[in-house]
Length: 243
Image 1 (cartoon, helix red, strand yellow):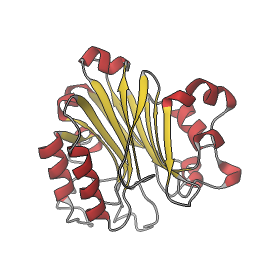
Image 2 (cartoon, rainbow, N blue to C red):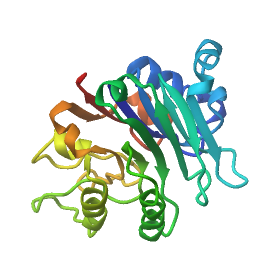
Image 3 (cartoon, rainbow, N blue to C red):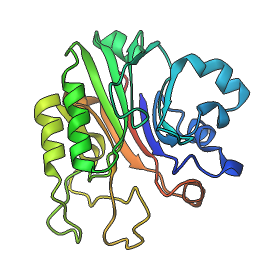
């Protein structure tokens, strides 16, 4: 199973809306969590849209043209009503997904894009998720606008955001895929507005149940001139072995 998260940066340039097709071509994800995306139909080929329109949930932010989306390749996808943070949080419940069929539990998946003030907003979003029943495996990913993994003492940049990792671990039993797959590694940059490479901004992440650690193969931040042209964020991709 491959899970990808990607912030497209204000929907991307109208002449370069190939982000979804590029992810499908390079990653071919089973689950795709997208932020700052216009309507998915604007990015996808007709073939992909006709095949997957029922597998996508998208909501825009206010009067903007962009918002957040969740794509799940297989299974029956049902939207989760979100009482607030419309377009900044999109959630789905999935039955019949190959992974969940074997595991014996449905999936509950959220694509998150934290608005300001970041800490307060993320806590409120997690408060809402905590009200949902504990009968599904939970995946949360996206652009938290907060550091999504633990830095080492030797790293130049340091953060006071361990509360996020602690809450996700203790309350939801979730692990950071990048952290778990890359122990003792410095955090790579996922948002490039900070050009100082000694202080990488690592705010995009994928969190899955900690009990999936045995299946986690690797987690990568994709970097190339092509990705840099498309957005100021880099995609993050987690790969888990088949159960």
